[in-house]
Length: 90
Image (cartoon, rainbow, N blue to C red):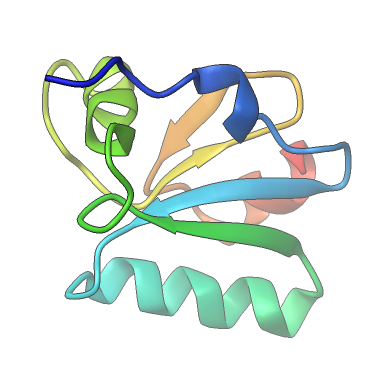
């Protein structure tokens, strides 16, 4: 078993967010569309493809792999946030 992924590498710079997703998540697609429309910069990380990132999502969601989970520049996270919250916190 490999070492867990370093969470710090997923804390984005100010003005952007890291968005943990899956390929099948409709909520993720909708939020990405809204962030694109509002000009929010983001880095998408698919937890099904990037080893160790599902554990990061689980750590924010009581052991559940709930997406979208966004990480903000202050290191805090939000699960399935509304676009207004993303704009406020990005």
